[in-house]
Length: 248
Length: 248
Image (cartoon, rainbow over all chains, first blue to last red; front, side, top):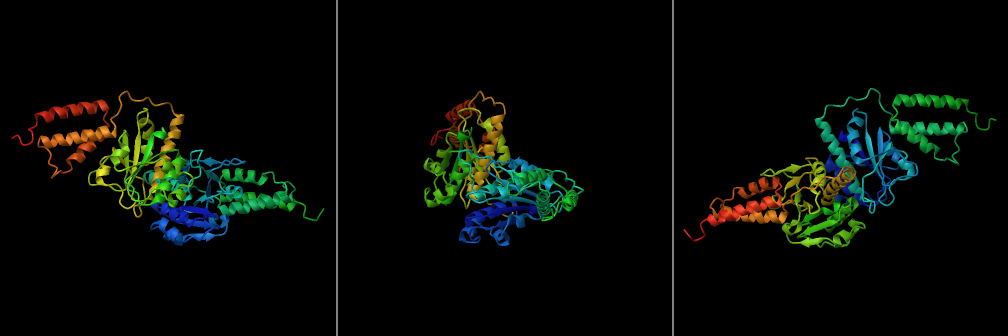
């Protein structure tokens, strides 16, 4: 189970935090690290010092340009978020996240990403809206910003506890239908937006959070691959009915 | 409740870890920090950098020479321990520790210390035997040594969760009888050892873990102050019967 949990760091500024993250991950039995557009050199003396023997995880980490690439194959994407947003999103506690993991990872093709934002500004709204859910580590409201590696430590600890509990519990049946991957969902959202524009329902110049609301609704439902295929079939059929640009 | 939880760091070598500890504590709403015989300067640029705004906790920290001084007024002393020892001691999980805290801290005079050892060698056996219980953070057996501030982060997180849960739960009745403080317990153990030597039962030259076993037994019972007074009365009475040195 633990080998199918990926830690994703976006736009990290301090190599020490990458090292601290690697150490926290290895301590808890996690190994899959992805770095999205880091804003620093990722392997420095600071990295190695804070990793304290776990720098192999940084060597093995995948460095990519976008969140998309980092989580394309994941069936559940959870963003660590300190803030409540204008558009409320499904919010879970670290403990509830841990409790969900055995079921979320019951099938071999399942993969979970835990996404952490920049040291200074966290995740953008666009990044948060690519997540199925947000996880908030409870903190002192007067001093709420955790160190990045400390936040990874807390969630990785909950992952390990969930795994230990599950080792003792009877096996969860894998679901019959595979869930849609993040990449399939994003293709669907692009298709949906294109279609809504084509039919004159959506104007990207005045978006009024339409796509965000549709994302939230869809992600909450955890679509199966087959369901997404049906939805995309509907979109294709709809597109064919829409007036072509320059037609009328 | 949180204001009566003390974090005790023994023999810390890296100022950055003291700063990281302060940040983790302040994030989780803890404020009481004690430093026992630190092996580094405690307030350096590294401390302030890792504390990231929480360095007031280091300014306010008490620096003392011995564990005794740091926990004298505490009614529960829990040592963070990675290793299983020759003499097994009551061992609890971080979660179980959190669940115990509301009751442990139900009376105003109650105070809990969480004790963390040196970065390189942890707590000594003598220090571990001064604890009522040991807490072990579950880790990857192949890479089990957590960063000091990361270990504080995990336990402080469990403290906060316990506090949040307790805020919602009905109040726990404070116990009728005050528990013995650490200092009272240590006076008792000194008295006990003196008495056992006086009556010829205990030879400090061949201790065979006698005192450790008696400590473990006594601490497990969580003696009330009044019970300890009774035990000390028994010791005094026994001492009076023992042959004086040089008598026989």
